[in-house]
Length: 226
Image (cartoon, rainbow, N blue to C red; front, side, top):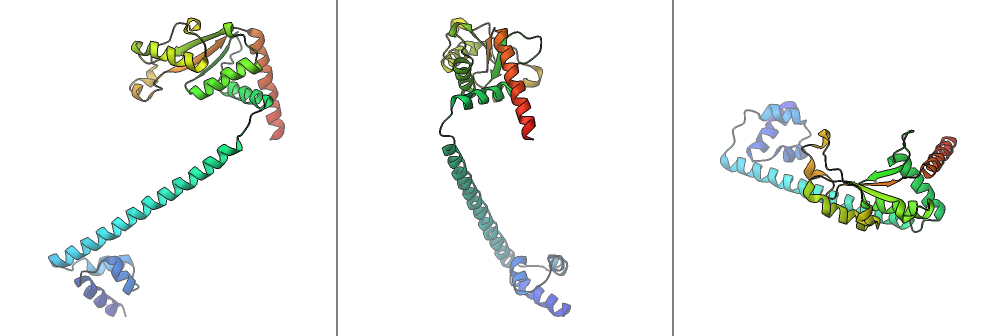
């Protein structure tokens, strides 16, 4: 039986058939095909046909993967758009909890620190936190201080103007910018935030203490949900 399969396999190969085409006609493993056909010499025409068929299969496979990827991206977009529609309103209590959670994650909470301090490079997050500070924490406009970290002295003015627009705080309330690049960031400047990082600072120990209390309350609540 194996002898007949081998002869048939060799005959098909000499017709310029690919391994895939041979496998469709004869139920044989790829290992057997490789072993039986390793010493078979083929003409230029046979080799050209095999190459053509393999290229067609490869092209079909690439097109299939491209289509599969496109369909996957379309499905993800539908899921994302539907999820966006779920967030259609934010109550005052929602805003309060969101701000507490963000400060818990991103704010400066060292015990000896006496100022409220929140730092991020995402303009949307900074706008959200400014709303939180204004509406929930009731911070007067004159209490806000903004400090930016930018990557190069030539970017200071553009960065200040950008974050002034995002925070709606005049540049006169900006403190001296920080332009030093940390050792871990050297060589990555091109990938860093184009307008640097924005730090919101409010000198108010009472507010800082209240925020710590809110965080402790949220921590206790989250523990009870576990």
